[in-house]
Image (cartoon, rainbow, N blue to C red; front, side, top):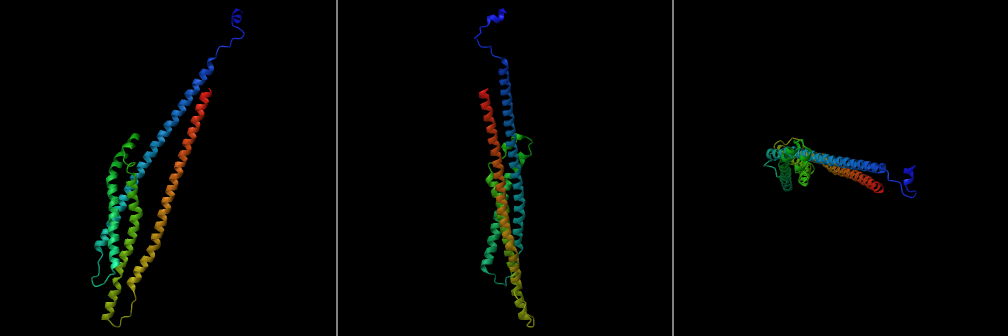
Length: 258
């Protein structure tokens, strides 16, 4: 009774320790959740960097193989083609063949040079089993050069190679008509054979024209699809970051209320 009387009637009750303990536990839980979210975001960024590294390495390898193969074929075609000295080739045909072959070899050799210079540095980092070693790779800084080599080797290089095939067919088959005319001069009774060489060259051109058009359309569609996929991925990442920001802002407001 004496203890109850010692407490004044209007005095507030002593504060309870349970709310403070609950608030502290809630703050610890929010802090742990925030650290988990940050660590998961850090790992996702590391995974994205490694994916870019492997993609750059694959592009460099593909461009180096394609450039070496097609430039070798172009050089062999230019060396092995046998021009008929007795046939008067059209001037624009010889100029077009020479220019196309030179540009083709130059483009592929430039792509091969970029791949040869950058690929060893990327390979050296990709073989190290450490998450933080991805920052030592030059693929991010040399991104434009890698894309340039990829475009030269695939899009422009293959298109020039198709043109090279058409020009080579014209140079190879056009002298056939002159040979047949010389044979008719020696043998008068031989029936006229028509323009066999020109027809063969026209046939190769007619076949290769839609193939080149389909190649251009496929290249444009492929790059647009790839850009659309990257845009969707970036939009998803932005939405995830926005959700994370909203959650963190909500946790901060709850902590302020508590």
